[in-house]
Length: 219
Length: 103
Image 1 (cartoon, helix red, strand yellow):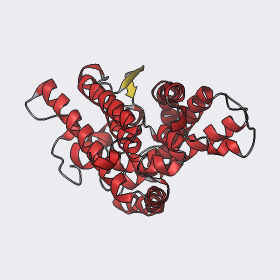
Image 2 (tube, chains in turn red, orange):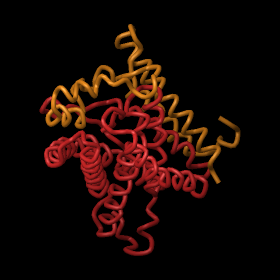
Image 3 (cartoon, chains in turn orange, purple):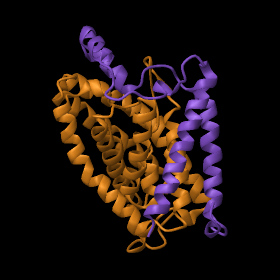
Image 4 (cartoon, chains in turn brown, red):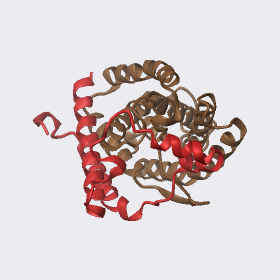
């Protein structure tokens, strides 16, 4: 879902930088306040893993492929959507400058879509489902899936405003492809990784939002 | 790794993460689907062909050393090298940033 520079006029690309910048700054502040010595290796491992998995496009039929984004996964493990914003910002910087994957001028839009929107929607969907006592596996799957679909729809709207996509066909095509990409590439992978970590290192996953209520309901 | 990191049990998580990330990096050029991604497919479905061709011919704002995760003239081994390099760059940046930013 990496928008290239040619898909958006510079004037609009700058606006998305202005919108994304406060989130990037908040993510740096999150790191300064929440990141301790023990979490640094987790952040680094997640960033490297997400860069690698983004190179692995999964075929979804219809002559189309897609890959995981990973903001929801990072947010769930580290307990804040800002962690997802931080990791996706680092990954998108390297992808844009070293590999020409995703534009430079439109990087603000890509950070907004893949870091902020998929991270926030994915994380808070996960939290809401956990609080309604859904299992961690199902909550992670649904959160990551919905987060990706919403970010794809936001991308379609941005490209409509940019004059690149027509509105309804854009929403339809982006929505359809990312419903499938989100199911396989985002939902299933996120659920598998979260479940594996929950089984091997349950202490790693931030569950603090559950402790105020529904004690003992965590499955 | 510095001495202060020894005894940090999360280092195991880091090593496992590096191993998985490098494994994916090496396999990705062989396993990844060459089909266009969701955004590119959507563009091909709904954007006028001439307009799309014109947009694709616009050079990117910044020249990249390894465009499209490849090294010119090196084929698959170049793709493996490019993705492994990217994974290591992100790893080092992530670790260095974390070290500098941590409370």
